[in-house]
Amino acid sequence: MKIRKQNFGILSNGKKVKLYTLSAGDLKLSLTNFGAAWTSLMVPSRGGTDDVLLGYSGLDGYLNNGQFLGVTVGRFANRIKDASFDLLGRTFPLKANDGVNSLHSGPRGFDKCLWNSEEYEKDEGVYVRFELESPDGDCGFPGNLKAVVSYGITKSNEIIADYHATVDKPCHVNITNHAYFNLAGEGKGDILSHETLLHSSSYLQVDKYGIPTGKIIPVNDSYFDFKSRRKICSNVSLLRPFKGYDHCFTVDGEIGKLRPCAEVFESNSGRLMKVFTTQPGVQFYTGNHLKEVAGKQGSVYDKYSGFCLETQHFPDTPNQTGFPSCLATPGKNYHERAVFTFSW
Image (tube, rainbow, N blue to C red):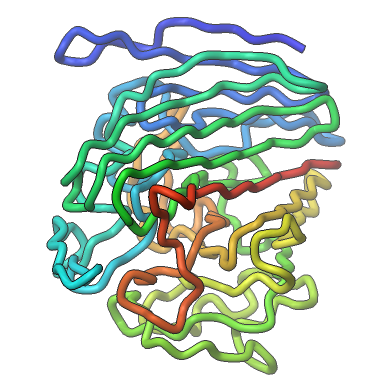
């Protein structure tokens, strides 16, 4: 197991940005403390080793990362309707950055911050711990929050993602990573032939702006039925209004326990990724809004160049009393976990 640390660039305020490369088993994962972002994931296959993460060649890309490639998003991932919510008799206005709605906490969420970071070894893996202090009123949210996010890889070819937060006032918290995967290798075509299975019996109905209506719909006999593995392309062109998937699926099983969430298989490479989560939902996104994004090594990312499986609480939970709560309080910390495994 190895950990390599190097400089990744310098911000306009003179602060240095770090890049960590973790090696364990057959995987190699690179991360930066700007946005606590995954920048590269090298995965072998029967045809060779490829980087399966969409991303940028240098820091400048992450400073102007409108598509949230690889970053950690919070305080609240996904959308909040009308960029506001009520809590304990008070209305909290947020910054709108998706029409009138808030997406990933607005124009300056956790993905735009420089996190404190340190590398460490534990058991059979190597990790980076990222820490961030979010002051009362940050992005419009109440209370001082401390986020501690650990990412690492193990000798068993797993990526471990651990999300913690403590608050001194009640606040809705929803933290995840926004990695875009292409199991054929980044820049090697679209992901429409990837075969996907979701351990999900239902999904959240949304309006044309991606805001949940409050209805949870069974997937049976619909375009959203991935209970058996099938190619993404089989229905993607028929979906309106997104012309692709950008939906939150419920994860079957007991919320709070680590359980199977998804599987994705790419036939040419033979790579298989499995995802496990403690969270109630997963946002399955097929990169519908990617357009001429200048990526790594001269790659250009367009629609369907990558897919995301963002394990998370449901979007707009602060405004939806029927959804599982993600309210953290001084006596109740936020803690969620995800595991990504790879084989070939």
